[in-house]
Image (cartoon, rainbow, N blue to C red; front, side):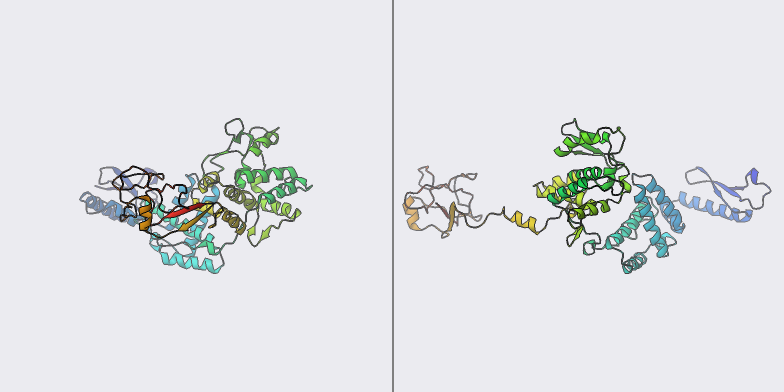
Length: 459
């Protein structure tokens, strides 16, 4: 039986609540807060006892009951719980702040008071408002992904049975690129580095040599700005084979420790760059707070290279990471290797960093062989050998099977496998069409289609 009581410290206090003590369906003793009036608390105690009996008899599904409880809970409680969940993960503070900010904006603007209010039409109405405000499609997609991630967490933690927002779709951000970047050529990168080194200006607190080193490191490693800002002498191992660079998980965008091979030019330059620095001194102090795009713009303008063209802008991320990935592929590196070096989880992301223009396509086209060849000429001949061809070689040719191969009692394999005759003399069957009468004999592989004969005239 459930009992109703007040704590001894609350005796005589009219505003102090009563408490209910009872045993649940598993026999575990529990307490629940009641009301300030004893009669109302006793009614609640009876209701609790009734529910316990029904659960013991299997008349109430505890999971369904918990879902009903969560649906009636204020939405702010679920938001606070999700924010705690993000705090406990490996996510950055920036990621958590942006995610919660977007979710809270949706909840507030769409008028969501409880989980029952999470309906796709309400979210769509708010997203349409964002579009009317000329917000970028990529940014709007971030809102969709944030609220869908929250709903998936609600399902995982049994606060919802299914996600009500799975039907929401993201927009095609490719048709609304707000920050189009372009990759530089190797010559332009060289000029950028020389421009910084030869200047006498300090831009964003960085002197000429510091900027030149920064541009070189960004181009030859493909590291992001904050990853470059985290580099210290202890990040490099120049004695290993091959020499390596390590980016700590706390500084990497995908929150994993990255070990990358170093370019030979950096292996030669780094001893001088690191000389005089302590193991924990930053190679580029306070870089994370610098306007690196402004530095690149000024150094490019000094040598007459436009910062922005029809192809896009050449900010720090473009002149470094975008150019790094593009030049890897221009140098013949496979797309898989480029993805590994860029540390992308999806090869589609690597493709977004690849800027292959018309000139690159024209250069690649040069490797495609033409139809005219100076050393040999390919001549098409009738699909069947004539009787003269057969009599000249004393060979009865097999007819082809359904697969287009010559029928033969002897199976042969490989490109150099000969065609067989029926004369039984064991000699190779020569090609029925030869240059002149006594030209070189040509071996014809059996696996070639028998209805086509090719004569190669050597020039």
